[in-house]
Length: 326
Image (cartoon, rainbow, N blue to C red; front, top):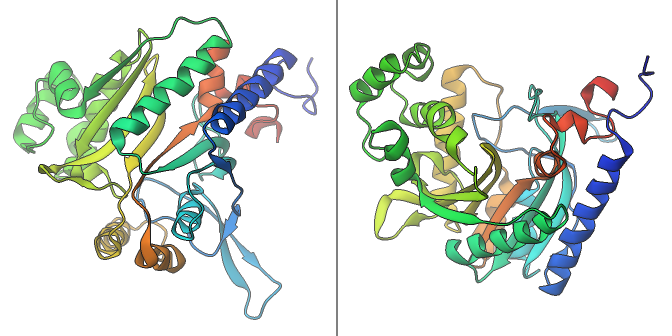
């Protein structure tokens, strides 16, 4: 019987994790991208209705201060960008409440980076180059492809992702025996897209290498710029391998007025749905007002990447002490 004090993963998985981290650091050092650290505890958290958070109270001030374990280092890193840091990356812990399962642990490891002067095309090229280096660790042949969200969504569902027809979406869900979809998604376009994409599209992606899906519908991209040629589309990309979503990136929104409007919309939705209350991150908004440089950035889930490189079936197999052993 294994004692519960022991690590959950085999030692070879710890060695693989160390190799992955060393490869990432060498990759960015060659490109003169600065490694940074930002706080895990902060005075504000994101407004995304899809994310729940951990909160605590700091008793060292009067009255005690509400603090949050960060769901992502994004806002703090953008404050560094606005202060003139140049291109930066970070390997950091992030925390999301209520997330636990094969691909989730409430505490997990992110690689997040921002490239000043990059657009989405340059970012996607660099993502592919990083994965090529990681695949070499396990002698995996590397292939990558880039597909628009609209094209891949239509390929596997026959539906238009940019024009929301609730009747067509409902009919499709019923014919595919996705009977919970109408109740869960109601008249929310973004919820329908998330539901149908995860069930009908995502399992097909990244089966011959990595797939980068870009040009997402604007209703799904709270931190991305809209495409100047088609404002129905946002400059967002996601990375998939073996049907698993590994990362989410943007050509970053730098308009503080538009960003605050998006925050307000998300906060109103949280109130309407009875979700935990949040406040806008005023320091992040102040950084945007001061001037965020033109940049593109992405966050990758390192535990999932290591899991797939190792041929494991759960991230708990590549984390020393997942929730069950914490």
